[in-house]
Image (cartoon, rainbow, N blue to C red; front, side, top):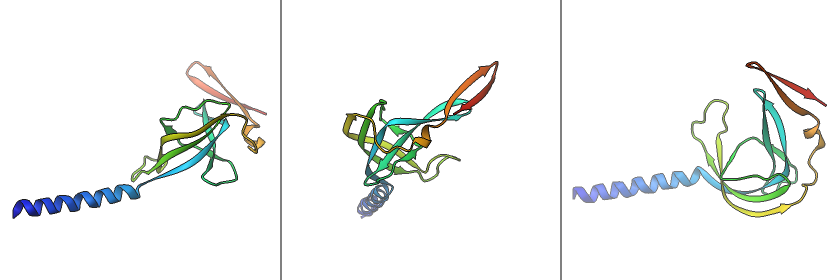
Length: 138
């Protein structure tokens, strides 16, 4: 009788946590533009993806890495990713993680309709001793 109760409790526990796990993730399609935007952070150039989610018409900047995805400039990608909600993210970190499921398409082309204003500033960093200076120029 005791083993029957343990089996029932184990099954209930398994079903509960499997169901909760499914609520924390979802799969989405996103288009990644053929160019990236580069921003300075701590005098290091960081590249950001330019993306459209699902059926969006407008491009937006995407600040999260995509685990398992290797980007090559000059190619526009349509990919399927798993979005995982992070229950307790680090300070200033995203509350979502993105993992590549598969690449739907990869086409060598220049993405259209990206706002030119995102590329107005060129960024360079100069290292003098142990101090970095960031120079912004138009």
